[in-house]
Length: 435
Image (cartoon, helix red, strand yellow):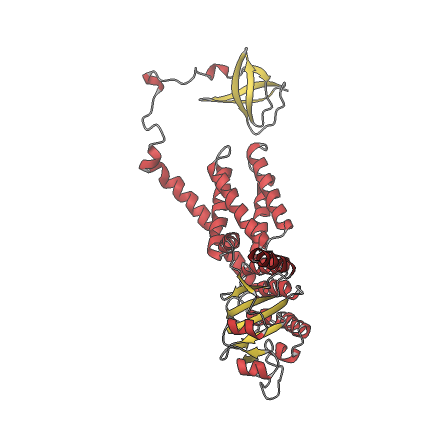
């Protein structure tokens, strides 16, 4: 009998699976790091065939470009989406709440005040306000809510009889939101939300941001991104100033890769900015290893890298204004200046430090005392030979059957060409092509 009941329960559970409700949290400043988290929550809920997604909202707002990404993710799903506002959905938070099919508020909550402002808190121009009005209007219209109130949250010129005149923005209390059709009902907690929508038997799946989303959000922090840019500049400048390739250059590339990777995930940097950076890096590497001196290729590479970083800092912000550009310029300038200062400090003080002295020979071993590393090369002055390798500008040449490391004076000489020694400076043998 028990075996039959057990088999029956398994059979019925497979036919009638338990309902699932995913719960996401929007309870801090809205930034671009929040958008991938919400997109993943929506995707996971769709794969689970969830009955609903509840977004628990308590925010004063944040970046509007991040809010529009979140709105697009929420409004694009066919699942039941519920905004549970506990306690407020202000500014960009109001747009996210309006994107949900249902809005529940706790008593004493508030929603509204969605005027677009810049980084200093000042109201931006009409072009940006018009964009935000259309976003609020279309979102409210999509879910059957009053478009005049949605627009009034952005523009104080919109009059709502009995609510605001032409000098006030719309910010609704919970009771007002219910009265004017913005909220569907008022409930005290999330358990009452489950009861209200007959979901008490549903499995609650609490969605938290994962480690990858937290890392991306951390890397996008303005202070952290500035440090990554500084390390990148430091590494590239150090490699330009020193021969070959070493640890500074590798650290710089890793730092800039982290910067561009997080910016790409957050839709700040596109493929174009990444290709600009790669092209700039290739030009700098060619300047270091292939092209003698430092000229057009190196300068072009630096310009491309600076431009790619600047565009990634600005991003595709629809509310781009002078203040946003100024902030990007300041962040870029501080990072570059800090890298130059760091290189100067290391070059000036590191050789004198006790740690650095442990890695170098402190006592000079003079030729007069019998120390020589190689025979005297002054006898090669004026000697003629053959370039065994391509000299660009360094390489190997043969003189009287001996292989000698040589360098040209910024001249490119193909292997097999006749050369003549024009100068001998200690261990440095300078040659030119014999015409």
